[in-house]
Length: 149
Image (tube, rainbow, N blue to C red; front, side, top):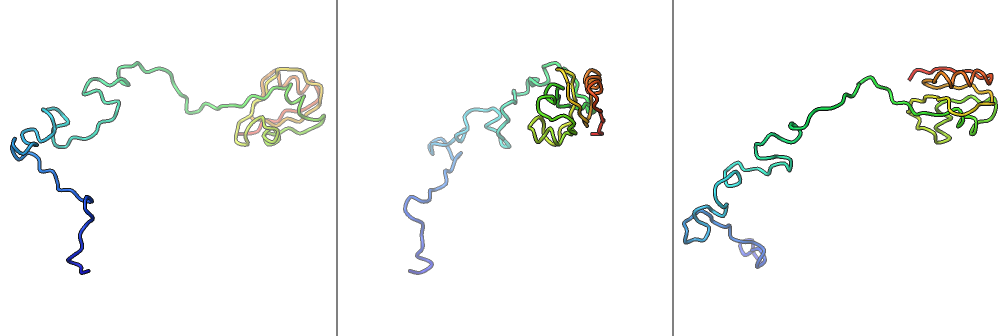
């Protein structure tokens, strides 16, 4: 076999469809693009599904609502009753310890809330405390330390 004898397998290639060569050729006049309109023009592109043909888009017709503060801090709440249940008397409670128990992730900001009763003495280190939680911890003989987050 020689280089000039090589050719593709039968059926592997097709002749290019020559459109717009007269009505008798079968693809004349509109060249298979239908009649007029955006999709028959050159430079036609597929439009995104939200495009409404020049009508004011939905996202502009709907009113704007709400506001997201860039300085807002999201805290993971932990109640005093949870601390009472999960930790021994005299324990030092930190966000890392809470993460080990599965109450928050390591990166979360923790706020201790005052739901429940407290009888054990704890040293609690958290990013924030509610007034009632602080009162209950100190009343039981423990201490509250605010950590910067």
